[in-house]
Image (cartoon, rainbow, N blue to C red; front, side, top):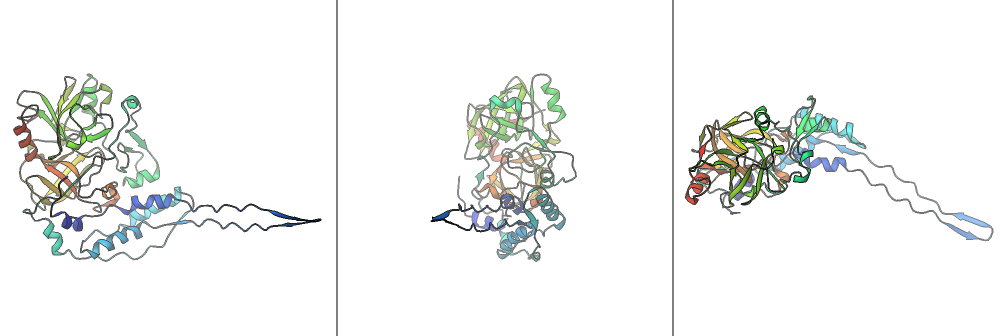
Length: 402
């Protein structure tokens, strides 16, 4: 990974991950029970003197206050001059009540006053200067594991849940069910679309922008875009850290069909992989509500971009900075979203690559975080396509599917 001069300024503008997910291990922990000392006795002629056993103190309940944790994070950001949204009391109260209801030995704690809003400072605006170089990025590779091929029939990465905490953390407390497809994500994940099922009934896999994919033996990512190259081959493009040349590719929406593509090239510098799709595949420019009608073009600070990934679904955010190689935006993304199409309307301008920090605890894992997560780095699609054409071979001359 490259290190860039602007990374320190980006850090001050980065919004830290939601404290709710940090608080869960603490809430779930129980106060340890002190071990009872063994009772003993002293023998004397005709007299037995027992040794007293000290009383065991009762465990103290763990206090729960999500708003206090979030306000602590906001206070630290405020000291850096970074403005963050206020705490939504309705949301944090719902989280606290769900935790206290379902986790033993917990109780609500009185919350501290909310941190006052802090006006934005020039330092934040300075981060978005278009002429500044792009920062180092940390790829979303670690942890993108999926169920082993031998267990694919069980598809453990398609898990429905009606647990109250799962529904609250997904931002849907009154839903009947929510879907989890990536470990560590609390989002209600995208469902398998009907168009994929129709093609699967023909013993083929349908690929389009935002299709979740399995790559190799252990990786789950998101497909950016599909089309054909100058030789008429069916091509898919995803993040470079998702796979290596020779890795087999499955659609996670129709894995029963089997492998239907192969990684033919992977460029770690520009973070893209080229996938040649097989005869048991079909391609489309519209998939699960996402349509790509044009490729590339300019991206400017302040512009709104959106993406669709298997881990966090469809999310949007403003651009902090952009150059000929990378874009930095407040798009919500995490492991599993790598390769997802980054869109300005129906124009695809990039693919999700990673975050500005290596620690994935600062990524976006639940909609309750709002904007409290580290910015996302995406690759510039114009740069990717130019490199594919310069390299030649499979993928060169890429055009969108009909």
